[in-house]
Structures are given as C-alpha cells and as structure tokens.
Image (cartoon, helix red, strand yellow):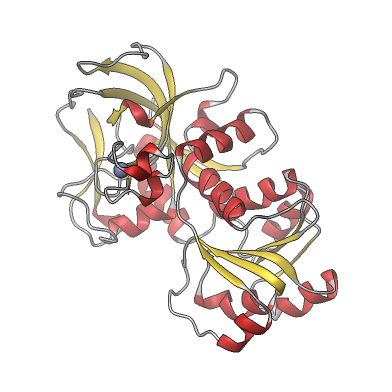
Length: 339
Ligand SMILES: [Zn+2]
C-alpha cells in the first residue's frame, strides 16, 4: 500500500509518500481501505514528537472513513464491504473505565495515529471496537473528517454543562473543534459569541447562528460583558496564552472555562482570587467516549450540525494540506481523498 511515512520528528517536512507492505488484521481487527482521511492539528504535534510515535517511520492520522477490506480471526458482526466511520480513540477495552463507557480515562488510552499507525495511508488496521457503521447518506468527506473535532467539542460542552438559556463564547473560531463547538452550541439553543483574528471566520459563525464576533487580539471581554450584561456562562478555549486573559475575564459569575488545547502557548497566568470570588470552574477535556462519539455522529448525520469542509486535497498533496493546518488558515475540516 502507499502510505505517508513520518521518518523523524522534525515536523511535517519529514513526511514521504512511499510503498510499504499491506498489513494483515490480527484477532479482533479489521483492515479498512480509506476513502477520506481527516487532518487535525494533532497530526502537526505528533510530527514534532508530541507525543512520540511507537516507532519510526510512522503513519499519522486519527480521522477517516472507508470500506472494510479484510477481517482478522474471531470477528463477528462485520463483513467485507461494510462502510465504516473510524472512532480514533484507542483503549484497552477491559479496565473499569473502558467497561463504564469512560475510555478517555483508560491508562492505555491513545489516539489513532499518535502511537499506533494511523489513517494517512491507503489502508489501516483497526480494532473492530473503533468501527461504527457509516450512516446512509453521510458523505465520505464529512464521514472521514468530522470525528475527532466534533466529538471533542461535544464532550467539552457536555462537561461544561452548557444549557439552552446560557451564553457560550467560542474563542478562536475556524479550526475543527471551535467550528464544531459553535455549531453544536447553536443546535442546543444556546446564545453563541465567537472570536477570531479573521473577519471571514466571524462572518461564517454569524451566518451559522452566532450572535456576535470579536477580534481575538482585541480586549474582547469588554464586548462580551456589554453584549451579555454579565459575561459568558461557558468559554470554549483551545488557543491558550494568546487569548487566556481575555477569555478568563469574559466569564460570568459561576462561569465555566473548558479547555482542550493550547495551540498558541501553554503557560498562562491566573489571578486566583477571581476564581473564588466569581466561583468559576476550569475544566479540562480531551477527546470523547464512545457514546459521545456516537452522539456527535448523530448530530452530523442528522444534519443538525453541518460541519464545514474547508478543503479535501488529493492523497498526493498531503504536505500542502498539513501546511494549511499548521498555519491555521482553514475554516472547518481539512482532509485528503485516499480512494
Ligand atoms: Zn481501559
């Protein structure tokens, strides 16, 4: 098979398209021929060794959708030719957390393409627990790209307990998670405010139900308080240092800050008295459990959340696609068409 191999962890320039032996599925596994694979900022991090792959060369990529091509011994419930969506969460499947649909706390939890070989190849080997039947009518482009970002956004809003009558501020809209969080919060009936450095991304959010948008580089907390009277009940953050101060100031009394990443700096200052006087919560969240992934798929497949596709590149143009993500130019999901 052809695969994009990461030869060292010096970044996305270390990727080469090469021929490698097609892997065979083991017990409980399936081989899936990819139709579309989705890219995430995570792939850029892993290309820099954050985290380090199990071995080099390595195949990146967590998101994807395709067709089952071969099944390992002992697999039931699936057949060759089935169309599947890939859930990028991997875990032991046996511990107390895995048994309780709480796999994100499994000690062996990892994301497909982080440690294990991922979807940026013509074929991928997966445990059958990572497969979900592709809903009829869902396009390959969406099926292959929505997963990681939409399920992450879904869990963030669930952990922040956003309610329909509340206001959510989504900081740095444009990337996969923040776009999905905007659309899910709108679908839930919440009032949504956004920030971006890019007026086009703000315009997109407002066309899709956001009430207002502000420049991420401005003192946007002032606008948030003016618009809401008291601040945002939930702030969705994955920018980090560059926006932290303003995001924090935007919180209403009793507000919840939910964080899933820090693409622009991961060390911030925090004035502790504000936390207790305003009775704030800071909530970490990453990825999603199986039920949350399925809920995200349902939102996308039913059309309640229409995640934007930024661009689907030909398989051979992966480096161009990765550069687009690295520079943060995308609005919505970037993917590659594998077959
Ligand atoms: Zn486990």
